[in-house]
Image (cartoon, rainbow, N blue to C red):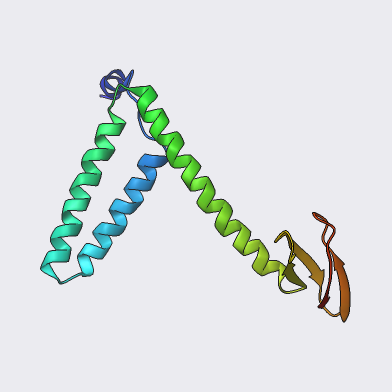
Length: 135
């Protein structure tokens, strides 16, 4: 049986990060659908679940590897942008414990100043503009 499945999958795309993401969305829809008592929402979620299952299988068993690879690359670029955005927000929140973060009035560059130093003159490393802020 294992050999038959391996022979069947030869030349097919298989699974990737986009399929894994769609599977997670499918599971979330299924869990939400279990707790929703509204008929219209339940029908909508069930139709989304069916579409996701069909799309996952179409991508997994596809022989057009270049097209599936391009779809996955587009997804990965979006995922990386989202991860970078939230990682940056997390880093800024961690820095706020010990530093003030100001923006340059001229070029909008973010500048990190240690807390507890009183009034300090800040020079922007990007444009050289000086301004005074409380730390």
